[in-house]
Image (cartoon, rainbow, N blue to C red):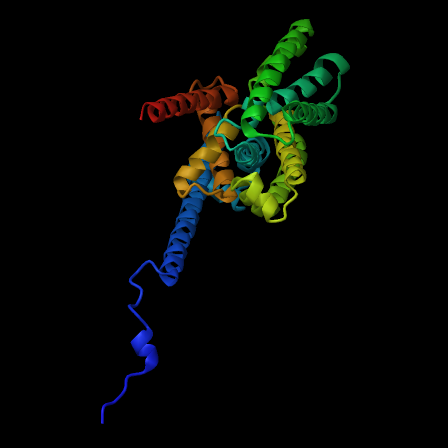
Length: 363
């Protein structure tokens, strides 16, 4: 008797060879796992780099300390003058560099994601200039202390964001238009800032000019702590909304199809990003190009082109900590404003972007 084969064996047809749904899912999971592993590795490396830059920054100065001694003091092993030097004189500046760098970097990541343009950072669009204008008005016209200057910077940044957002609105906001409008508004505000400095009293004008370059010289815990609280709270809020930011990265239409209220979400994210920039500007002045460079550098380090805010924040912290270290050491005992160093870094990066764009056009 002939044994009949099962019907399902007769009609099953050829089995799929690689490229089936299971294979695709497996490939995607593998890529996702590799990106996650690389992201963690990059994050750990950046954290170590941030720690090293901070230790070397704190160890230098007229009262020199070894890096190992600084670490000992930071972990509670110091006493007397050494503890005062580290914790009261140098750590406020180091803390400001770390927190402010992270805040500027995440702010830049938000704007670059919303505009889908590597030039979409608050210092290019004009929000940093607006915050500086608000603080400058308080210093030169109204007069006031740290709190009034901080509120002026916040008001200036938010008002500039509102004006740019309003002028760029055409049935929604689009990245390229937002950048062009922001550059125009920034140019107008920069001219107004020069006018304010020229009309101010000499001592106020000199202080405003140095502060306007972006500096961490002379910061104390009294200023660093409240500003850091605002920056860290805003960072936490952006991290909570990171999924919305990733959806917007895929396009407004897709985000809207997934149920997101696109313009409302953009407005909330822009407000948080402006708050980050304004808080930093209130204490340190408009520190340029950290918000421009850090997000793009973090993307290249992590790979995949996806948005990852933790490496971005660590990259910004490292860039500003390194920039401040160079500002302290390059022409010691003269200390440069850290903004001078970050402008040099940003200028090199802009040249790189232009060269890359030219090569793509020729290609």
